[in-house]
Image (tube, rainbow, N blue to C red; front, side):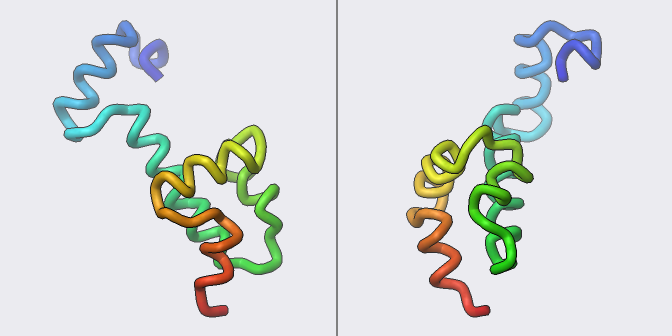
Length: 83
């Protein structure tokens, strides 16, 4: 992203945090996990497909982040939502 804007990585990260109050990495992580949460509400999608659609290389990466953010695995979250 920094290169696309013609900025150094450190300058981009600094400006992003000043403007948003969060780091770019945290913003991306939060956005991806929020998208996963929405997609997990569709029972037709496998967790592997949700991970792929949200930019995770594998289900393990999604599960680690999801558990850290929401306190549940993606499968447990899916089981706890009405549907």
